[in-house]
Length: 66
Image 1: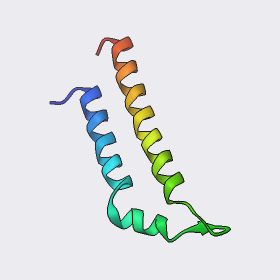
Image 2 (image 1 turned 60 degrees about the horizontal axis):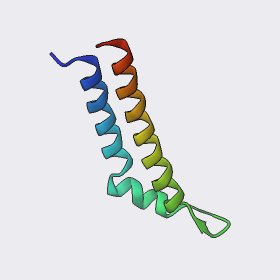
Image 3 (image 1 turned 120 degrees about the horizontal axis):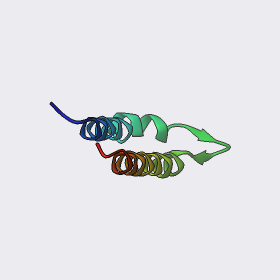
């Protein structure tokens, strides 16, 4: 059985795959506010969210001694 950290990291990887899946990117690319495309903002935000969540998972696992 997988330990908690590994399960959380695998879940995060699946969430990242969904966030960066081409059909999702096409949907976001079609959205524009005041003629400013949101795709660059979405990509940076999603990337930062995945990196931040990964850091939290790894750091919390280091503190808890799992």
